[in-house]
Image 1 (cartoon, rainbow, N blue to C red):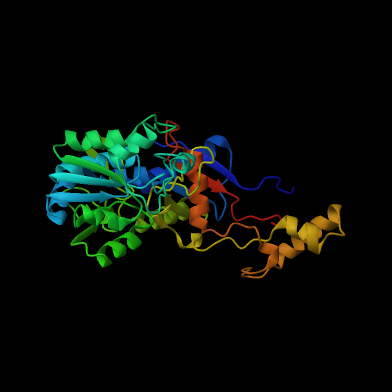
Image 2: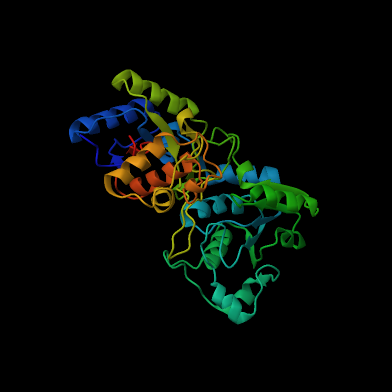
Amino acid sequence: MERRTGTVSRGIRCPIIRQGDDMAEIVVSSVVEASEAEGFELRNRDVVAITESVVARSQGNYASVDNIAQDVKAKLGGETVGVIFPILSRNRFAICLKGIAKGAKKIVLMLNYPSDEVGNALVSLDQLDDAGINPYSDVLTESKYRELFGENLHPFTGVDYIKYYGDLIRECGAEAEIILANDPRVILNYTKNVLNCDIHSRVRTKRILKDAGAQIVVGLDEILNESINGSGYNAKYGLLGSNKSTEDMVKLFPNECFDLVEEIQAKFLDKTGKHIEVMVYGDGAFKDPVGKIWELADPVVSPAYTKGLEGTPNELKLKYLADNDFADLKGEELKKAIEDAIRHKEGDLTGNMASQGTTPRRLTDLIGSLCDLTSGSGDKGTPVVLVQGYFDNMAD
């Protein structure tokens, strides 16, 4: 019988993960038990994805705000530190800011505007237009921002982030000065020691600051990139991708976990006889159309994946074929013609008009986004996601 479904994404319930747990055994057992309980079969090239949060938890990859403070003080001198381009997040950055503030006497906090790197807005573009402000060149002090725009609460969290971050810095014992600007060189008017906290633009920001004469430039990816007094760390990303764990602890992005995905793949093959692709995923890469927030606050969507998930889709656009190559066909004849075109498509469709409009993104970014939406970030209890049929096509 012809299969009537394409891609299916299932959240898989798992035990609560604790430090030291055998992630490979838990993942494989949970997926196999779900398939037996729900009556579906595993197939070759299914994808099993594990959220980075539980991987980091099993690794025990945690650090305290005091660990952060010690590293910041050692690397930036402990006096006046310019902290530039952080995202506006209680979960993501506020816990890091606690440690940063504890490691300095004064923080000059420079925020992007009208929004941060991932789309959290401090002010709207319409408000800037009305006030005659050019965000590419104008520098706003906190008092000037208040004079022009008053209080602007985040549409989803209801937080005034300028006040929230300023109060947090002072509560940690440091002096706080807040400015709004988009040219990283502006911070050098206040201090030559800079911690740049942007995620995806961090390499460019560091280069610009160094070329402009900064004495010390350290990225958030260089804080806790090694253990401090036995703390967790991330050698590649430091504090990027971290989340609040408790009021005084941060959970870091998982350390190297390619061995984990390969171990899980081998266990599936041994237990089920199926070749399963495996990946670890964090934030999906998509943008909210209402809040304008780009979800990707992690440095990458997937920090580890098996080799079968390399590359990008190589697909034909069915509506292009139907409207152009086979415009004179209909019904079963049209279906067979399209299936034949799929079976005989080129190995690389780059530049082929029949692939125009297909999604030119990496497989790990596409599948990771699907998994992030499936698992959610709340109380679903499904930190593992099974994706079936992703690599199928109409001709299979």
